[in-house]
Each structure stands twice: as structure tokens, then as C-alpha cells.
Length: 255
Image (cartoon, rainbow, N blue to C red; front, side):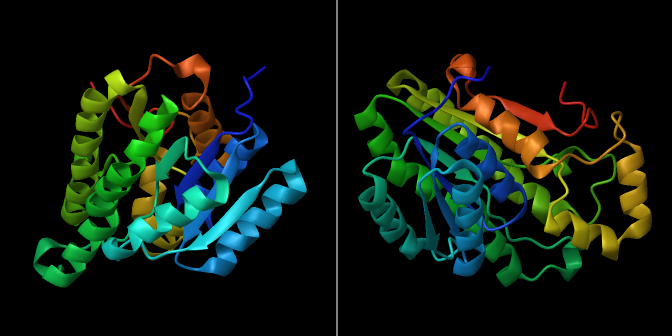
């Protein structure tokens, strides 16, 4: 049986749907109090309502566009006021475009960097002191296997954004590990709204993509991704730090 994480608090960005929501459900099933963060408050409220119905766990929904970096300090302060602690940070929100380099505007690329590595770094910086005061903490950052594709055409900007997150995560693992804070990265494939939209726009590529997964299927946001993240935040994984872990059914070769 998994070790419960009762009374722990997790702040999850992009928790209104998809992978963020799946992670929220799995953590809540272990007793974690979830702070669901997203641009659309109603979606986060729906996540919280579902958690209360399924797990009877305390939750809070907070609206925030994490691409507005100046708003993140207020977000963390509100989260801290709500539960008086933050034990788990999941940086999941993303904003990017998959298109050829010559068709990517500077503004769009800068926005993807703000929502991706810049917001990830800022949230880690803001929450780190709270984790240090508590004596431990767990940071899970989401990246992608996009930079490892056999054909990286059209994925350059997305890959750059996600590789920056991996670099920041490795630095955090090294710098903050001695303080009791573990930082890891997951590279997930899951049946999220974003993946569904991509598959609809690129049906042939999507079919080839799924066919290249040794397990023969796209992962489930809760059962495949969320459950792994919950295990990663549990005492059973206390020696896992600074790792990049592909949750992709064996598609990527990280060796």
C-alpha cells in the first residue's frame, strides 16, 4: 500500500485539466491538500469539486496567469495563507507553438519562455524558503522528449523551452538537495486536451507517434502520470533527486 501523504500541501499549475488535473487527483487520493492553479478559475474549481467528492480532501482554487511573472509572489502568498505550508510544487503549465523556426514570432517565443522556464524558476525561488523552513520539499517540473525526436523540425521552440526547465531542475536538485528538497523532471505522454488538439491537427503524425510507443498506447493523465508523481513525492522515493524520467511507455531512449 502507498504511504499516505496526509496534511501535505501541493501547489499545481495548470491543474484545471489534463495532466495537471490527473496529478491533483492522485495526490489528493493520498491525503494531499491541493492548491489548483490556472488561468481559468472555473476549471480549477471543477478540479477541486471533483477532489472533494472523490477523496474528501481539502482544496483551494486560485486563478493566476503564471506568464505574468509579477503575479507569482501574490500567488504564493495566497497559497501560504490558505494552508500555512507548501510541501510539493508541480510546474505543469505550458504555452508554446509547434511550427517552423521562420514562422515563430519573437513575441510568441518570449511568451513560451515566460510561462515555461521563467515562471518555473520564479516559483521555485519563491517556494524554496518555505520548504527549507519545513525541512523538506518536493519539486516536480514537467518537460518533454521533444528535443530527443529523430526529426526536430517544427519542435525547436518547444524543445528549447523544455530543455531550459530540465537545466534549471538539475541545478535546483544539486543546490537544494542538501537542504532536504528533491527536484525531479518528468517527460509525460498523456491523453490531455493539448495532445488531443495536436492529434486532430496532425492525424498522420499522431498515428505514427502512437505506433512508436512500445506499450502501444498513450498514457492516462491520472493513472499513469498522476500515480507516478504521487509515488515520486512519497517516502518510498526519498533517494530520487535530480532525475529526468520519461513517462512515455518506452518511446524515448534517454541513454
